[in-house]
Image 1: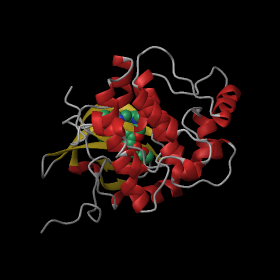
Image 2: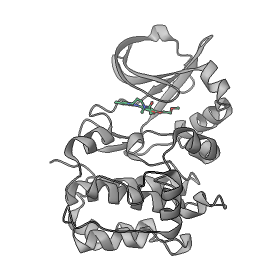
Image 3: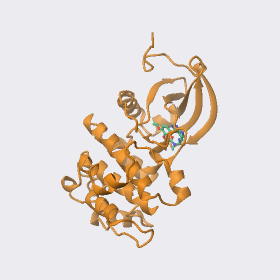
Image 4: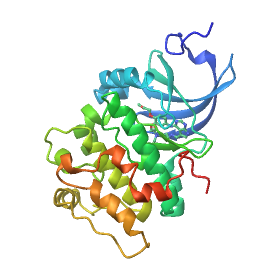
Length: 278
Ligand SMILES: COCCOc1ccc2cc1OCC(=O)N(C)CCCNCc1c[nH]c3ncnc(c13)N2
């Protein structure tokens, strides 16, 4: 019978390791094939020493626990994990079209149809996560992957919930933080609505809305909600209207995610299947 993948005692010998898929903060990700099933997966290798040094090992355990129970087409599956003397290995769904931010860099900014399709997919994934009382998945382009059909997958396990203060200052990007987090007051699921608004802006303009040279300037622009829409590229007023309803300082007044899915810009531009076919 099919043993649940989370219970199996996996070892490195169960896999043929393929090409590296990239290097993250805590380790490398490789293409791999499980020998018995020939199932292609991504294997993320984390060094215990680095996890200890950054005091995130308990956080990783908690996130793996959450992630292993999540099942959503726009959330990267975690099939299992195992460890040896020096490393922890995560067995993950493989996203064949790789990192979304590379795609964004390549085309500078996305069409309104592509941006709306991704934003709607992310909104559906966040509705699912909020329904499971999981918030703040740290949705920025670096943590988004593209599946073989062109569908979007959230790869990050929400490290940010407990480590966001150290982690953010550690690796710098504040662009996605809402005012309440920049001012380090308590936050709720509406932080994700803000981050999704930032992402929507970045999909359409190629840069995040509050970008500035210095951290202090980015903080100031976020707290002030200093939102400006450049004249180029030309973006529809419907898109600007949606972004303006998400980037609202008062978190209780941000457009709720289910209302986002009924917004004219989404209804008019997003592909209902969540797949951008180009
Ligand atoms: C504690 O860790 C939690 C899980 O984090 C990840 C799971 C899977 C990931 C990436 C993850 O974190 C980010 C990261 O390591 N990089 C940015 C470097 C590698 C980029 N991946 C490239 C990639 C291409 N096709 C893929 N199919 C599946 N997963 C992938 C990739 N990467």
